[in-house]
Amino acid sequence: MIIDLRTYTYLPGKFRKFLKGYQEVGFALTSKHLGSTLGVLRSESGIQNRTFQFFMYEDSDHRDRCRAGMIADPAWADFVKIDSDALLQQSNALLVPTSYSPVGGLLRGDMPKMSADAGARLFEFTTWTFWPDTADEALQTMADEGAVLIDRHSPDVILYATPDTGNRHQLLRLAAYESGAVRDRAHRAAASDPEVQSLLGRLHRAVESVDETLLMPIPCSPLR
Image 1 (cartoon, rainbow, N blue to C red):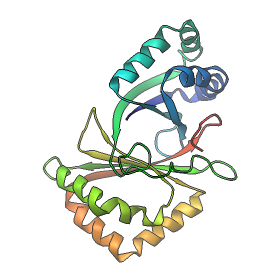
Image 2: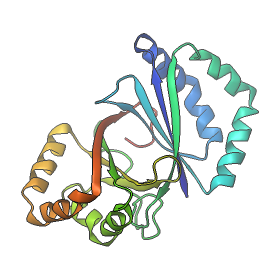
Image 3: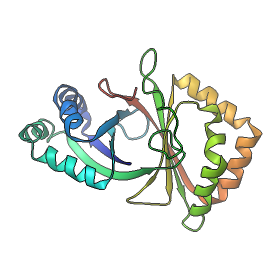
C-alpha cells in the first residue's frame, strides 16, 4: 500500500468556498477516481485554511491509473474551475505504512476505528524528523518497542508511515482523540510514565525536530 497525502492551502477569504464545493461535488469525484479515501482533514493548529487529504492505493501503478482516469473525466475539469481562484499552495507526499501501522501495516489486525460514537474527533498529526546518521537506528527502535510505548496512552492510532518522496528521514503518525481534553490527559499520562520517558530520552539524540499539527475532519471525511 502507498498513501498519497495531498496538502492544500487556500486564501483565507475563500476557504469556505472550497469546502462547500468539495463537499457538494469534489468528494464524489475523488472517491470515484482516487483509490480509497482514508480521510479529509482541515488544520486546527498551525497554518490555517489548509486541508490534508489521505488517499490509499495498492501501489504506484494503481495510483497512476486512478489519476489518469480522474484527469480524463470532464467533470473533474469543471470542478477544478470552482476553486481555481481560491488555491494558494499545494503539495503532496507519497507515504509507505510501517509494518506496525494499524492502516496498511504488515502486522495489522482489526481496522482502527474510523468514526466516533458522537461528533468528530480531534486528530494529532506528528512528524518526527531524524538526523540522517541516526535515522535508521531510530526507526528500528520505533519498530521494536517505541510505537507500542508511545501508543500506550493513545489507543486510537490510525497510521504510522515513512515518506517515499521528499525527506526520507522521517516518521509520521496520525492518532485520534475524542476531544482536546482527552488528548491533554493522554499527554500528561505519557509525561509521567517512566518507560515512555526513558524511550524518549534514548531517541532524543536522533531527533532533529518534532512537529505536531491538530486536525479536524470536514463533514464528508470517512475518518472522523
